[in-house]
Image (cartoon, rainbow, N blue to C red):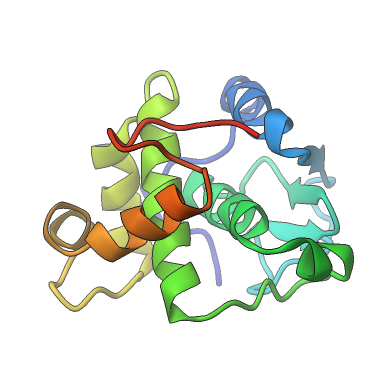
Length: 163
């Protein structure tokens, strides 16, 4: 998919904040050259890629893409992490947890926030039964939050935890 106009891209300052957010989870952020294919990208083009514990991006990678792929890494079990290349897999419950986690992470990033990321998710084409990421997050993400709590990713107050 080509870059969606208006979505937040991973500029160098934002990249540093994302790396700090992900480092406790054992994820390394690597930057591919501007004209290079992104290693491990499921969608191709500018979308983030996963190869083992490395999250690959470019300067034109959307923030939502990087956070989504990183959240897949955090939400998967060790055997899947050990063979991770391109396709994070996971079931419906995990996918919901991934979407929830990327929104919670965005709220922790200076100058970003959950609202901005949810607008980016909608612009890119994430689909939710209630019609938008915001409506889903506010009214239908309880199961995703419970999933994240059960795995020690967030606490009872939806605050982010680290391993």
